[in-house]
Image 1: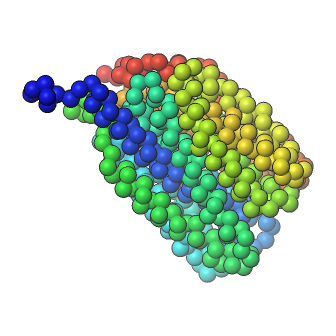
Image 2 (image 1 turned 180 degrees about the vertical axis):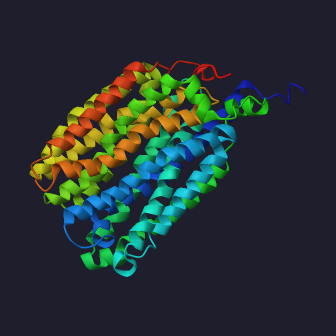
Image 3 (image 1 turned 90 degrees about the horizontal axis):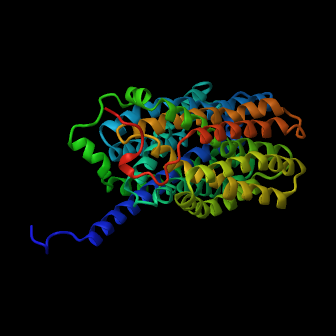
Amino acid sequence: MTNLETPSTADVALRRLKRARKAALAGFLGGALEYYDFFIYATAASLIFSKIFFPSGDPTIALLASFATFGVAYVARPFGAVVFGHLGDKLGRKSTLVLTLVLMGSATFLIGVLPDFHSAGYFAPALLVLLRLLQGLSAGAETAGASALTMEEAPAGRRGFFASFAISGISFGIVLASLAFLPVAAMGEAERLAWGWRIPFWLSILVLIVAFLVRRSLEEPEVFEEKHDHGELVKLPFAKMFSTHPAQFFQVALMSFETVTNTFMQSFGLAYAVSVGVPASTMLWVSIVGNVLAAATQPLMARLSDTFGRRKIFISGVLGSGLMIFAYFSVIATGNVPMIFLTSTLITAGTYAMSNAVYPAWFAELFNVKVRYSGMAIGLQIGIVCAGFTPLLGTALVGAVSANWGPAAWIVAASSVLAVLGALWARETAKTPLRELGNSVP
């Protein structure tokens, strides 16, 4: 090859930057689809499903049953993490992420065509649970895979920044879901329960098509391809991860409890606010404002972690959320709408954005490339599984007494303490070269 044919350093850097940007876009769109799907379910579980998928009777019992179907997906998530984590470490990131994307989008669309309890009896909630399980299987590996792929493609010194776009996609997905439900919330109850709630589920097909086209055009990260081409991948990544990275697994599991804050606010917070007289449409706008800003602040927070380290930014955010949640529920109980907007935004786009933006890169960086997808996906699901059932627990503890919001806040605070302990235990990885991340894997 002549010098004219040899790519210059600048050309190589530009090509890698383009790959990193495409990976970040794919992660953004995948995160948007995942949490559009998950949040419209959370919204429907809070406002709709208790009235159409279960027998009429005590509304609190029906809401508990609705939140139980919401939590079912979180039971499936660890199984999805194991299955798709194995495929991602064994066969490749790209193909696995395409599969999880299609599974999530298809399940969400089908929820929108389910019969209700009146027309199908207990067959209706059974089908709802089945499709919710499929959503959970997909979600168990989506964020971890997108984060691992984007982190591996990112330029040196900017891994946190690029990986955070999967999380900004999640914020964007929540915004889309809230916007989709605004006209539904404005409908009369009869129309909303009969057919209006189905529209947001049908619209998910549009996000699926766009995300699928982008994700199909991705390439495998070079650091993974090197191991694949030299036959260095392990046969059972799941088992190998536990034998070579046990500490990292438990560190990620503890730190993943930071996700309880968002799940609690977006699900239980909505139902609690409506129960004390705050209109559902108002709370949807609260979510929209906070997540629009979070989509912008999260890359900034992640960039700060590239400069100052993952641990400092993560812990600051977790502690801030654990304290602010008391103010959040306090102002909801009083029905003070301006203060609800302020406290929710300070958490969503401020404290929670700090910890949430850091974890995609940090969790992935704790593992060797050979077991990275499995390690991050499975570890991440520990806290997320618990998060999925916190709305159910909060509803049971708070009951019908609107002033009794304390147990809900303490659930979030306790989860924040667990996340801080994990962060104090984990190693700092922001400055570690890509090929030196994780423990040795023979």
